[in-house]
Image (cartoon, rainbow, N blue to C red; front, side, top):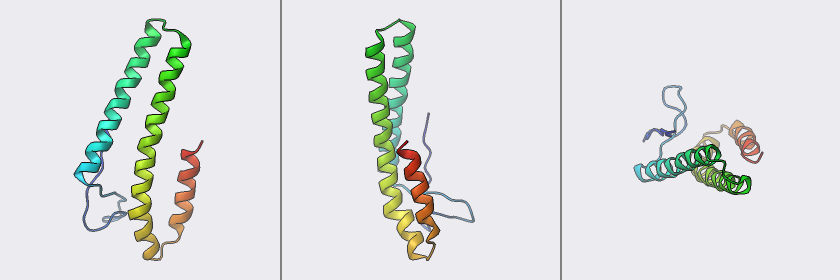
Amino acid sequence: MKLTLVQDTDACCSVEGVRKSHHSEKAKSNLESRLNRIEGQIRGVRGMIEKDTYCDDVLNQIAAIQSALNGVGKLLLEAHMKSCVVERIQAGEEDVIDELLTTVNKLMK
């Protein structure tokens, strides 16, 4: 699984009608590293199941994966709020708040 984020210096939310983000190369690298690590953890869980590893050990690994995914989500949410959401509110697009609340609700499930 590879997260592709597009860097754009004109606007963070929309370029020619296509919504995109603009993360620094350092931020993208950090996110990609985290996702690569998570991908490895998932492969590890698959291997644990194939080897009939004790269920509690597998469940602990799954909890670690969920925590790592939550960390990625938090980083993306923070960046989104500090850039795209602020920019869209300043541009008078208050509907971004409803969009953000929907996204936060999905993340909290």
